[in-house]
Length: 429
Figure (cartoon, rainbow, N blue to C red):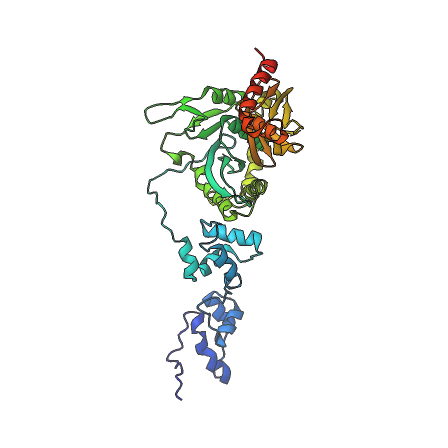
């Protein structure tokens, strides 16, 4: 067997990689080597010189463990077409493994090794629209501005199998990037007022202005390049009560509020929990995401939002008095359904389906209606009324059917007759 040896043809030393040439002279003592002088000339440590003379060579690649292999089966199941969970980004998958499967690998290594598995890498290689528009970056002083947005109509599958459309409210302080998330099943103006009030209370103050798009709960007429738009009267009154200016974006230019638009993709993380959570657990998940993004380094600023929020909040305007804020707050009332399948609110009774007799339900009153929930399941809705008894005809027919006071074939007609009589007795004229 013939082995090739590296033959030294000169002893010119230009870097540490040439120091191996001195090894033969060191071994037979024919040349006295001044390692300290060599170290000074090459601007390295003397110990480095000694190591390279003895034949050390720097490896071309780092010896890193594949962090994917131990979690291969878990990842394969999560990314399977049969799984209803959705992972829009590698970061979402990494975070899910960290939170639920004790994954400890760092994100950059995770992405590096994930690309070596074509079956996983192809999952994330989906074409996404690119935006080539030029935008200019600008920053605002502390306390001056907050940006408002909704992550709208996110389909989410509850652990019960029911699919709901979730809306997530976001208010972000422009200077610190500190933000508040709130979850809702609808986006009415009363909910918007309540969420803004909650956010201001979380901030401990009110910014000088709020940048928003042309959502209908804020603008009656959209702002365009040629029109200043028209702010909704109720929202204008809300802004005056809290002491901030409304700054609507020009329609079709979401980059005006890019500080809140760009980070919204983090909320796609909730789709990774499809089929795993009930509604209350979903709200808790969004709260955890909210706390995490406020305590991690923001990519745009390189700062931790929470640390800079503690500086910014001193520049916010004071909150209005409790008497001003209270009408904008949505409170939850807890009531028990009586044996007549009704609950009482402000001296008036309202019906629910009879299967809820004896159960505790939750009432939220906004937009002139009472919204009734059992746990987080929506039961029914009633318009606020001065009538002492308020029946929905379907509820009354179900109550009558369960009480067996009428024959089945006569229930609908008798229910209508009785409701007319009840209306004459209890209605206010």
